[in-house]
Structures are given as structure tokens and as C-alpha cells.
Image (cartoon, rainbow over all chains, first blue to last red; front, side, top):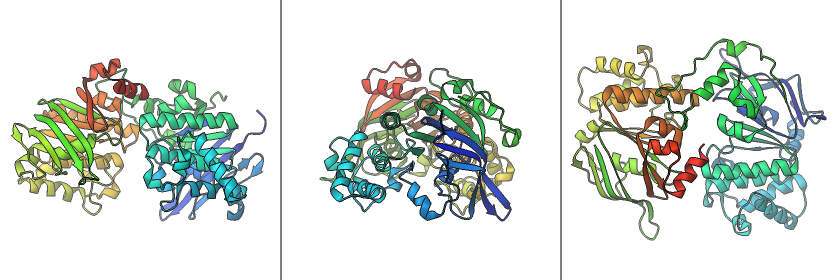
Length: 287
Length: 245
């Protein structure tokens, strides 16, 4: 692989508190190529914070430090807000969990997509409208002309999420960070949204960081998976090998899921060990 | 234990009336655990809320332990028989009431005596030590809060527990603990469960039988064995099973 799209080394996010510093992310390193990278972990593992740190969205008193955080060789660590804003959206985009809270409720869907496009690409209203329709088509919304004029509360959750994706993709970013993009959706809609994201990543050669708590979903959908625990990456492995994971935390997580095909009387409960918080990441075969 | 037939639930008045549940019928026998599954908006939670007396716009028959229920009024005997656990433990506990206050209020409402001993017992039942008694919700994790919510439901010594997505707000490792707890409590206290979930694997773990709902209607009632075999009679059921594997 040539230069990776994104290269992160020893990323830390620290919050000062009365009881001393709290580190939400503790030394995360990874490289992202044109691939689908899954980041899995439980709440509080630092997976969302990692995504936000890349986008420069950690607000004070949070502090972001890293040995390296580069977008195609160019450092993006702690850029001034004005320069970060140029990157955000146009080169790195983020899709959030719940479309209900991420769309502007008093602006039509069409206006929002057009705004996001014109902000980054400029151009007139007519061109932006054309692009917006094109994007809605790309996320397989039937009758995009009608949807353009609706308000967010008039569309369903699945459609809202597709509109979010359309909006994020309008400026053609190189990296898409998706933070639990399907957790608020029903299973049948979920499959559809994943298919759309998958197609877009493949067709446009984007890099995708897919943040999720759902191990099985990530195993099916991603190429590579990072498993996070207490702010650290405890294991990194190809998604297809997830079920042969070696770290006891990953194994414990997988076992604690009830399964339809193998009924058990009691679910094995995860016994957390202190060493998982501190132990070094054992060198696992990188793909 | 529970008989539901011809159940219709609606919201609003014509012309804006929405029929949330149409012609639902199922029965749950004593000691059984029954699941209601379906996608959001299918009406599964609405059925639970109608049984619990949280919705008054319904028609049809609901019979709990041989007694017919009307409207949204429930007498004290009803709440001694039926209790509910809600989805979001962050929203269902009063942020400024300690665990002790939550449980003693529930016990007092049920006219129970010997509150001190009972609280200790309830906390033990749900796997929380005595140390948790005077804590506030913000001092508890999500799983511990859900344990308190379960303890509150158990305070009335009910025989039927209505569980509305009890683990969907929790991490998988915590979900496993709560599911184990629910299984144990059911065996120890001989409880009957009606559980709403969108997760077929969770229902498969806890329940014996389940009803599959779509757009307000029960499309199929099946056993968990059939669910495991993927043997749904309806296309929709098979689609749902395939999508969640």
C-alpha cells in the first residue's frame, strides 16, 4: 500500500478533572487505507472520542495529543479551527448516530444538502440542486424531488440516516467516519443503509472508519477491526478472523452475546481484568 | 395468567387517528415467558403499555389472572400482580432519589411492612450488595440502574413482569448479566414474563414462545424452537430472522 489516507500514532485524549487527568483515549495508533475499518468497543471505551479527535471535534477542556496524525502525509493535529473547518466535510466527513438530532429541524432536507455542498464546493444554487438530487439518488431515495422539499420530521429514521449520508458525501470526502450509523435503525433498514455505504466506499475509493458496539455487524461489514477497551486498542485483526480473536476481552464479548443457533442456559459473563487496561498490545498479524 | 383478545389500540381522533395495534390476540400461561418482537412502530410496546394501564384508548379484552381490565384505571390488586420494567434505566429512575428512597416508596405504596429487611432482600435478589442502598442513580452504572429498576418492580412481589426492551440500552457484557438475572429471578419466584424486544437472539434466550408483529398486527405466534430453526410460516418472520443472523 502507498501512503495511507490517514495515519495516527499514539493518539491521546485527556480531560482534566478535579481528581487529576482522565484519559479517554490512551495511545491509539492505526493507519487507514481505502478500506472499511471497524472500531468496536463498549460505551466508554473511547471509540467515539477517537473519531471526534480525528475531526478536531474535542472541545476544551479536552486535550488531544499524538506523535502523528496525518491526512495523506499532511499533519492535521490541533490545526487552528479555521483550517480544520476547511478539511472537515470536504476531506473528512462524519455521520452521527441519530439523524433526528443531527439534521436541522427548521430547514428542508434539500436546502441542508445544498448548503453543505456550496460551503465546500461553491457554485450556484442550480448546480447545488443538481448535485443534491444526484446524492439522494446515490443513497437510493425514491422520488428525490419530493424529499428535497420535506422537513426532517417528515421522514423516517432510515431515510433520515440516508439523507445524512447524502449530505456528508456531497463534497466528495476521502474519509468517512461513521459513528454508530445504524444503531437507531431497524434490522431491515440497517441492511439497506450498510449496502449504500459499502457501494459508495467501493465506487469512490473512500476510506471508512466504522464505529460500532455491534461485533457481529462489524465482522460482516468491515475489512479490518480494532477492538478498544478503556481507551486502548487491545486487538487488531482482519474482520473475517474476528471469531478467532485471541484477546480474552474480545473472546469474552463474543461469548456474552446470546445466539439463536446455539442456546445456552446461562450466558458467560465477562470477567474484566486489570491487565487489559495496561498490558501491551501483542503484535498481531497485520493485513 | 394473561389473556388478550380483539385488542385495538389507537392514538388521536379521526381524521388523525392512528391505529397502533389492530386485532391482537395472545395468551400467556402461568410461569411462561412470552416475547413480542417486531420493528419500531410495529406496536409491541403499545400492547405492554395498554396492559399496564398507561394508555386508555383501547378496546377489546385484557384479562390478568382471571380478572377483566377496563380503561386505564387499575386497582391496587392489579399492581400487586403486574409490574413493569422500562427500557432506559437512565430515564426511569428519579435522579434525586436514592436507591433506598426508590425501593421504600415502592414498598410503602404496596402497603408492605418491615421495609428495612425487605430492601436488603430486594437488593440481594438483584445482585447488588448493601453498599448500594444509599447511592443515587448517577453513582450507578447502566447495568446497576437496571438492577434497581428490576428490584423496584419486584418490591410488589408481582407474578407477571412486563419487560419493555430491558437490555437494549446496555452494553453486551452487561446485557448478559441482566439476562442471566432475569432468568434466575423467574425460576426462583415463579414469575411470568412478557418481554418486548427487537433482538430475536435476546427473545430466544429468555422466552418460550413469541409473537411477531408488523404494522400493528400480530402476524405469527411461534415457539422459540421454531425460531431457532428459522421456521417462520410468514415471509415477514423469515425475513426478520434472516436479517438478524
